[in-house]
Image 1: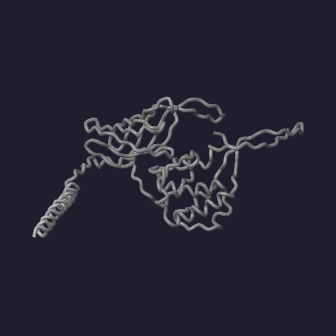
Image 2 (image 1 turned 90 degrees about the vertical axis):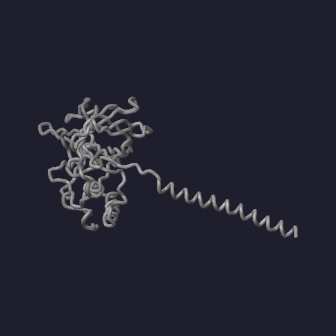
Length: 305
């Protein structure tokens, strides 16, 4: 009889422990659900200011004149500030310039209509943007955090809000400069004096030049074939290929491509990686163009700048 009582007591005790344990588990689960349900979502404000502001990013730098002389002057780059989210206490977004995409966080002052936006600070090109909003434009300055690490630690900004939209019809304009100024090449040529008949060698610096094919071939709209590409210059192929990326808002690291597409009014750099945005046809065309670029030759000529 004692053994039976002990067994009942043991079972009762185990039951109580189980109930408490289950009670805690149930309560914990319930608390978790309640916490998720009651978690505070910080409301967004000033959504009308969201978007891409793009334009000039100017600072001191070295400029090369037409005769090859170098002097210090105002160097202009293209920058985009993309504002993604604004709350009462914070602003979130990213800066995109020359293929370098950096997140920023800051604050918005409603009374002065101004932003103070800080990049992370773990890159030597990071800094603080202090810009004022006026209708659809942002103007102000950027200060490098590490002033000794950059040539121009203070730069001015003059940006206009633009709506980015992919459009497969975008092309370079026929009045655009089709010369690659960034990669000159020296050629040894001969000169014969008509009076003396004496021939001398001299070195001429020449630049790559594209053909009118870049205005005709659209790799975002047509499936390219080897026949379409076999007689094109290397620079033609590079421009046709990179036009795909430019239409998707790719921010180019190479100045050659930036110089071509920044001449247009449609190019808006918004990302340093648009691979996932390409259509299947565009991806196939890029692969074909890469094959031809590898073996194509360039056309060089002499130009003054």
